[in-house]
Image (cartoon, rainbow, N blue to C red; front, top):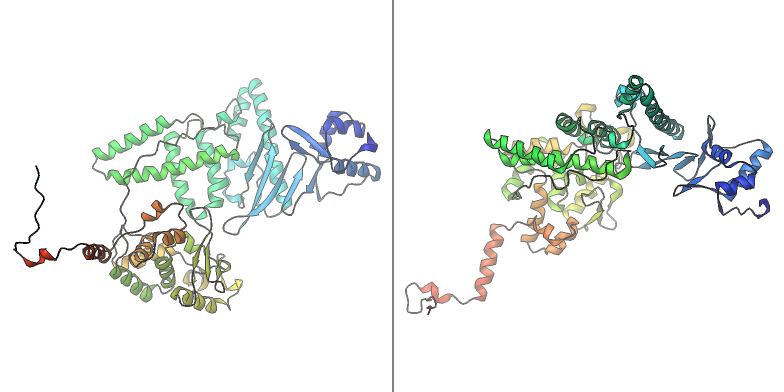
Length: 517
């Protein structure tokens, strides 16, 4: 069969054992040790003919040339950003904030592929987790490989813990507690508290750094209510009963029921996200159904009123006096209807003044959208002036990674080095100085922009396109008719209906209602 070896064909373990004159178990051991590169097709290992030939050459020359040697495991680079070993691999990617993140994957004892986004700061890992996970700050492929070996070691310990628990319950219990599992050692036994802690460390703090504290508070809340339950035991009925009990207590104590429901929805939405994360194979948690779905309380839609012209004027006056760097922020939000995250994360690479396009990439809809401008637009002129003033700045002039962002200011906390504007905090200060009602937030700019455009002749379709909405009904939620616009509707209708005979007071031509039978 050696003469028929095709380099571009993949072979099963039994076929490889025949080619190399080895036992199938020996071939598997070569794969597990990383000496023979392989991949899984469903549940079966397959080896490329080119890898078989390379392995034979290495046996002849008694030399191996891996990308780097990890003990007895060979690590092979399979792409620009990915590496593979015999029982797993790792790769890196850039998240929405431009930060480099590492991800590892491996096969567990049930032959199920698992993967994990790595922490970049091991100081935040709980001590009891460090017992079984040799975490490191992952910045390159060798450190990712160390983290992968730590996960493989954890899988080995989980299998070992199941055996120990059968013969030595006390010792097995210690291992089980350290691993965060219960006696049966499978995903169905993971406690909800462990699931939430894993989500917090391995997802929330990596992808939503700005919301880290609020996420911790919500996790503490749910830990106090359902933390001792297994993740798979929580039901929709239990959540609904819990929400109803809180609402009843709020009614009995005279609290604002709508505020209580809003808080419940915010906490419940985060719990729903945690369960979605578990279902998406982010860990072996045994969760197949999200219990939060359909359990969240229903809220009355709050009618949002846009800023009046007087309120806008006050906001710009107070910003000019106390927070001048907020002027362009507020102007962009009020004209383009951009959300606070879209404003905060806007980078110069997404502003193309030559083509007259501002591209918003960090959108709630999950897809990019564009705002069209030309040299006659005040917005175009504002961005042009800002770009000229920032052209001389280099990365050394910045603090906390603000380089490349559009809306920046000289931060007095960092010796007036440049950084991104804390838009939410500074807007609250401007709003307070302007004496604007607390119910109006930065998001009110979005309602204001759409309403002003609509009241002055812009079509709903055009506003929908600028806002990136999938349906016109969603856009209508942001369009509020002004008094002038509503008066104009009346006057337009009057021109089409002859009612002059009503204007002469009491006359013989006074309109009469039709008489019924």
